[in-house]
Image (cartoon, rainbow, N blue to C red; front, side):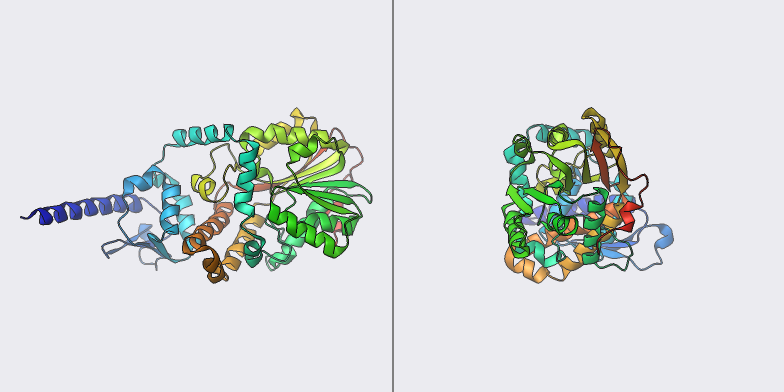
Length: 418
């Protein structure tokens, strides 16, 4: 046998070994029936034995041989990268792939201790500059990109659905109004929005409640769009926006009656959670109210490594108790806590559907790998809120005691702006 023939036999044997390893992993997965098309063209069916007469929910396609050992070394990153690069493809609903993975997490081995240690080491090294760069890496992709698939408010946070029939735009306006209602705003008060996004909340607060509102952001793209909106509404006397870190703002000794933060806390970082509340304490008047709108999880842990690498550098999702623990440490009193978990599942599902309608435009500007990366991100978010312990909470708290709040929650629902 020639050297070439021997080499070919060895490669065939290695490919068969890899395939056998994948077969072993996939055979352990229960629930949704699915097919796998391997790199050699063979197709096999997996899922519950009771489901084998059903049509497969999706087909996972290997465009080339991928060593299982590398995939299992860091499955979340490696699978995400393989999908982004077109080495793995999916025929069917990508959400079903995420649902199956969530329901069968034990089928994959991962050194969680090493993963957590590495993540915490990175968090400790996070500087202000790194956090700024992390925010800009994500949000400065350009207003044109986000405008393609967000609603007209450009709200990039959980919406509030009063009905499954609500449009995304309706639900985002309802979220803003629901948030502002909780703050019990009064005419003439000063409101600070930390991480003010594209400015709809501060503009609506000024128009509906007659407050003076300031927004702060680290994104130059968001700053430009917010200022354009303020100018077009003729609200420069009531609304302002600044490109500044909230910690630097706190050093200016300004004070506010109300402070709100929607969808920004995930960028603070684990090590800087106490710093955030220290800054709020210094800026919020005694008895003043603050509302924190943030993604939470049941227990502390490392951020999804693929998400950290490709979507949110330096991001950290806190547990609910990490946030709640800090409140009394800074003299804050919790007044209200509301879970919006299914609202975010519905929001991200809307985003994912909108995104699929504009992938040609995204591809033209950013390329196919970027298209697949953001598809993976948006779809994964939707399934994570639907299927795992990932949650989102709005926490309303006061700086010291506040005895002037309404006795019931009826004020939240009776007088919202239309």
